[in-house]
View 1 (tube, helix red, strand yellow):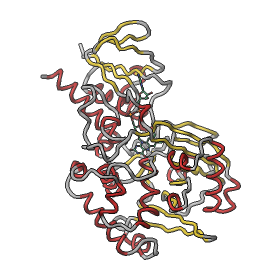
View 2 (tube, rainbow, N blue to C red):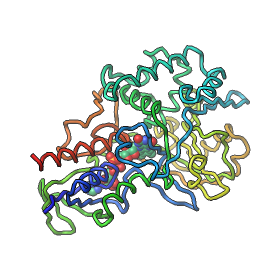
View 3 (cartoon, rainbow, N blue to C red):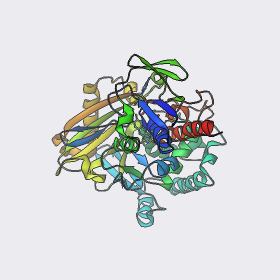
View 4 (tube, rainbow, N blue to C red):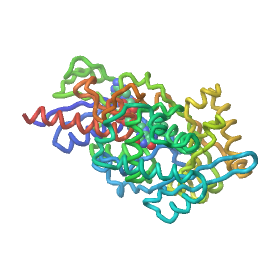
Length: 415
Ligand SMILES: Cc1cc2nc3c(=O)[nH]c(=O)nc-3n(C[C@H](O)[C@H](O)[C@H](O)COP(=O)(O)OP(=O)(O)OC[C@H]3O[C@@H](n4cnc5c(N)ncnc54)[C@H](O)[C@@H]3O)c2cc1C
């Protein structure tokens, strides 16, 4: 008879753990307290648009994602490497296209000559890229343990480059407004971005957990589950005690303590405001204390994100940036975001319809400079606990922890 494993939580970590164990012949039962799978990776369909919960991408550079997913089966399509930076100065709005010069040499060279960054800063970016790509991934998790802001200063970047490029890009990824995130996390993300693509699955971000759930089978995934832990091996499921050979905790028991939050606004636009498939960074977010960090048009990448003839524009506002301006309601955030959008894209914004404003609380766990981030699951959690909170707040963190817990279970029953 096969060994029985209960997994609590059907986010990415629980599903990855379940798919590995199911494929290894274990009898896996997943109990999810919400009414759908996916945890933080969810997508709603609104008026024919695919609306992800927060702007969310997958990275083909993540080693664990390469093992867990078949990007082709997900119908994944990629953003152009690099970014467009927008800055409004007095009455003039300027867009700079910063292509990755290593992957798009000609466009990169033109971008380099556009005057956005000094030749010294461009050289520092090239050196940084070389530095983070050296050796294996573990290497980015050794060495200093400062904040991202300190790391960038120590590498000699000008304050203008930090404020206008690194700040909008990484505040929108780390979901904090000070670049206080551990420099090791910065090195990890920068490495992943420089060696892979940012992609969107055809079915929205929820297609990633769906892909894993399909490997397991819906009949083994129980939604709206009310579970009581009786002991290490026993769960009370709908009032009845059930014994398992192992119980995995695939959720963060202290998620309420994750203070990083984000507002995401989604708009239905008659046409895309962008000329290229890049993410747009707002160079004024720090300098002018603005709200918008990123703007993306997912439907330019995946046409499935919008009905035919329409475009989906998605705007990211870091929760801390809104707090700083004491904006706490959807209406207040939308009013300010519309003002900023109008100053960037002009009158066309008047034709955009708001589809959704999401406030995602407890979005990411804290990874400050005081934590000795190792890139490996923390030893302070339970033996069979997984989830991004045990490594670092990312798809990679969730998947890596899940792989390790499933391997530990397999080893414990084969030795
Ligand atoms: C807005 C946003 C954007 C992001 N963008 C990116 C990105 O671009 N790239 C990237 O790498 N990462 C990104 N992330 C992070 C990524 O989404 C997470 O790291 C990953 O989804 C975490 O998966 P998880 O399984 O660890 O946790 P979760 O997704 O939180 O899953 C935990 C699951 O457990 C369930 N649960 C909780 N308690 C119980 C219980 N007692 N019993 C049963 N079930 C329970 C929950 O309902 C949930 O379904 C983003 C996150 C957010 C919020």
